[in-house]
Length: 161
Image (cartoon, rainbow, N blue to C red; front, side, top):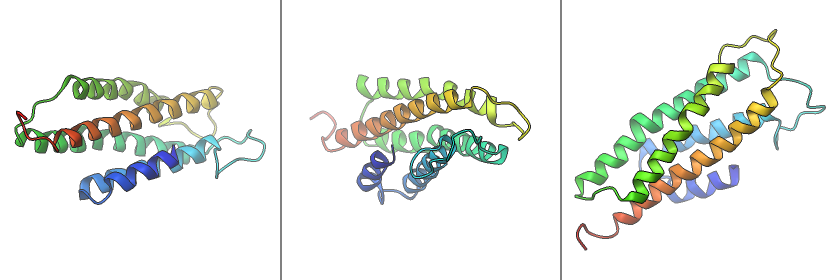
């Protein structure tokens, strides 16, 4: 996921302060996810050590912030600028957006489960839930990138051409 992120950052970074901030938030979310899951470069010795409640709470807050920024800033900003040019959404764009929305509730379920845990709480499904989170985040990031690319591609052709 981190290598894909670097490609996206190279492609879209510098186009907008809002998108740059969003990509920085995505990068932080990915790094924190890797640390929670014990993925490189944060492998844990003897994987039995659970993340602290503070780490889980911080990750959950960042996840909620990332999703909120996407929904209420990025998508709206991109679509508003795009609509101002006279373009209309294609079925591919609508489909990509709908598929992004389908990942929202499952991602927020993780926040509901782990956003208020304490260090004393037993978390027997954390590894499984982190694995599912990783898959959902990867799917969402790919769909977000796909939607931005579809919009960008459409802007290279004048409306009605």
